[in-house]
Length: 96
Picture 1 (cartoon, rainbow, N blue to C red):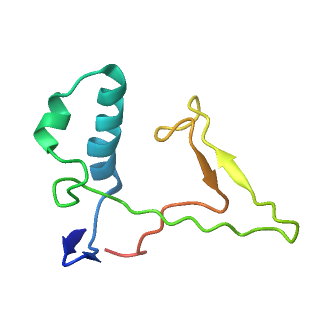
Picture 2 (cartoon, one colour; picture 1 turned 180 degrees about the horizontal axis):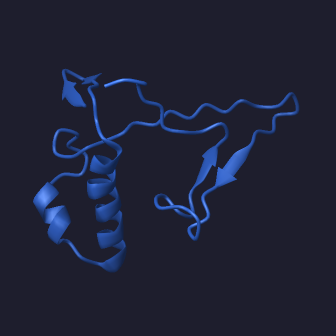
């Protein structure tokens, strides 16, 4: 992903590129470390690390309710303990 003049440009990426940076940063932050964070610099600089964007849109019921999912930390590799809207997922092209 590239940011230029307030616009995002998307390109091919690999799922594990995100895990290798974002998840490692999250674990290091929780442990109180900063070595990886120091290497990456500004975490909001989208050119410095792999980012897989996510868009969630509530598909509400007529009574105003909507479904959420909880990511059980004992059963998932990433984002454990996080609530998200249903349906959810990371979408990518079928070919490379």
